[in-house]
Length: 293
Image 1 (cartoon, rainbow, N blue to C red):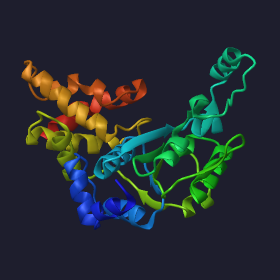
Image 2: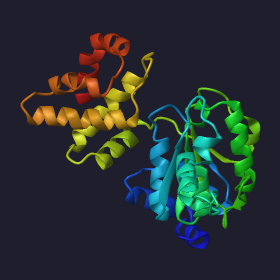
Image 3: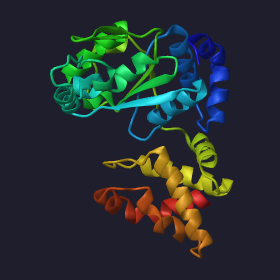
């Protein structure tokens, strides 16, 4: 899909929201507007929020909306240019030199180049969406490297020269806000904060993402999860965990466990920290009963 096609698909925030819903992702007006502006302005989109609110899923839905492949760069502490840009296949270069014998061989052509996510997107910007996931996990040096990339959408390979994107790529960055990002990075992006949805919207999401959960169960799960997240937990459950809890409880109920016992037995797919389980256990029965009422 060309940039012109992408702009046509994202004709308005409402069109973006409708197409995301078709990809089983519910976006509110503010998120749909941020995605719309990112595409129309040709600026990277920075999504911040707590773990589990749907940032990565939003990027996947945008790629599906545009009919493009999603290329994901998962950031971590210590990530460097070789993992993000490119590296040479030294073993293959050495083998080629040995096989060439006395003949000349150019060891810097494409067959020896391992393209990492940033280079992959530069080579085919109209076919791919770049997701730079959890940028806050990387260090400041890597963030500085990304600044250069996001400014000009090009990289320099000493042996090959500069490689530039033929058109401006669609780039989405996510952050769990474990550290503050540089202001220079924020200025280059369209920014949006994704919070946890309210109970009504979360019930809609559960219904959309689950194959066999009835509406009453979805609403009960959404209400219960809202109360559970309000507790001082080390790892509050995300939306994906809420969907899993609804699915697991439904499976148990169909297998013979009555409500609310099915919810209590399936709690391990919602809460995944021992201290959090211990903290919530005394209140879980009451929370579930109130949600089912």
